Image (cartoon, rainbow, N blue to C red):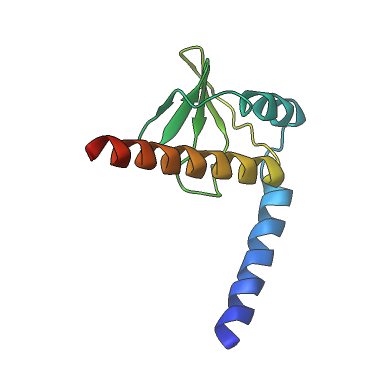
Length: 109
């Protein structure tokens, strides 16, 4: 019980930190939502590629969802989506990984 209270408190602090300290970018948030309607092209070590966008997906939730590279040009500024969009991105990656695992497992039989 005590652990759950500490965990909940830490989670609330993290959410408040991100809301006030990260560079939320409404334009990137809207664009990322549009991009998430497409299929994931490639999952790399620290990023994923969807179309012309390379999106940072390492160290969940800190830099997660940041536009890392656009059309082979590295981005110099951090552009973060909303927490809701980050969760949508996280679910999409989990679904992609699950589908890929299922496909490979079926092909191995």
